[in-house]
Image 1 (cartoon, rainbow, N blue to C red):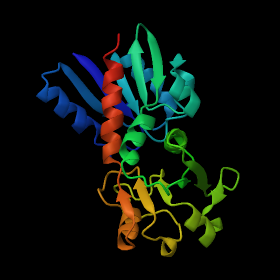
Image 2 (cartoon, rainbow, N blue to C red):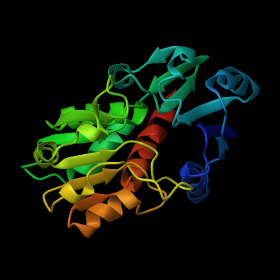
Image 3 (cartoon, rainbow, N blue to C red):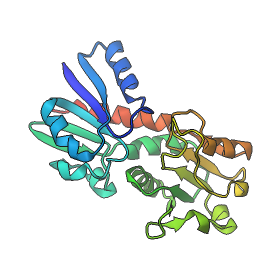
Image 4 (tube, one colour):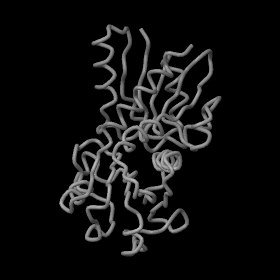
Length: 241
């Protein structure tokens, strides 16, 4: 039996195990997929020595901090600076980033010709994949952070900035189960029907962030299609020998 899993902390929001276990059952694949909520990345080596993994997903907050523990990065992971998929092959741990293709496939169908600038909320590993994906789509991205050294701050989001950036992507965990009452502190009153709100969070299905956009006539999308897209790409990688 092959072993797969996901590391992150916490992991109560994750649908990955459910998604892959369903796939294994339907396709009669002799494999298992489990959640591994490690409290610090320093636990990664012990975990991979104890269990013989064939593949692994990586989620927040370890998409960047896992990199020093890997042997090789593929070109996309290297360019993004974040890893969400690990292949264990011939004694090597190889890092990939399938968040990029998952995000591109999910958002591409929603874009209008006027969507040329985006605000990306958050500066973690997920936001790096989003920025890279947007660049492939020809969209200029601006990072928004609580830390002024990493991007413009939430307090600096003026009416002009909101109007000039029709895409707003939530790449933070705000709004994720169980903290469903939280949302990024952007000026929601400045949203219009010209805006597209994309939330990488998929649990719950509609976050407060998306609900605020829906109330103002915005195009909205949660992270479920991105999850499916990156998972399909991950499975393709894990089938390589």
